[in-house]
Amino acid sequence: MTFIELTVSNMLVWHGYDSDNNEVMEAVDGQQPAKKIVAISRVQSLTEKYVLISAGYGRFMYWEYHDGYNVIKDRLRTAGLFID
Image (cartoon, rainbow, N blue to C red; front, side, top):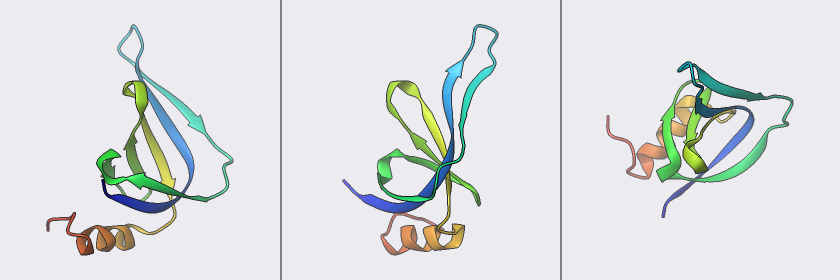
C-alpha cells in the first residue's frame, strides 16, 4: 500500500443523500493544520483547495490541504502515480 503525507485542516464530510435526494454535508471548521498520512487508494480527487478522501460507511471527506496543488501533483508524478 502506498501513502502520502498531507497537511490538512477544515473539512466537509459528505454523508450521502436525504429522502429528498439532497446532499447531506457536515462542515468541520476551526481545526488547526495537522499532518496526516493517507493511503493513496483513498484519494479520489485533488483541487487547488481540497483533497477528496473516501472514508468508511460510504462517506467522503473534503479536506482543506495546505501543501500546494503543484507540490502534491509533483510528488504524485515523482512516485509514478500521476499520468500527464
